[in-house]
Length: 64
Image (cartoon, rainbow, N blue to C red; front, side, top):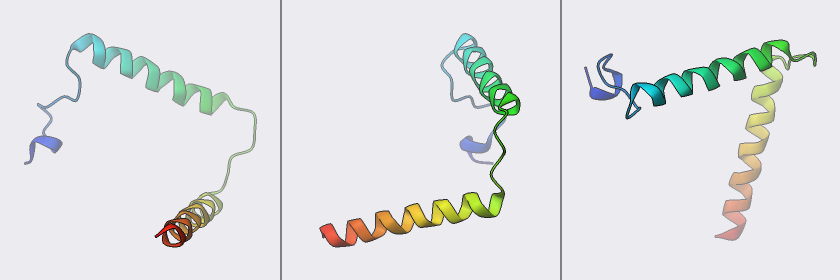
């Protein structure tokens, strides 16, 4: 098992840092759950992402 997937390895330098991140993450999840706006279907989200990535590829090719 690599260190990146080890349950004994932490990305945080301290327990306080890990707890702070956990609180932030949970607040963001709750914020998303409480958002009254309609969700975006997965297919539409992927289509938007594909369009954005293709636009960036075109821009990169044009700049080269």
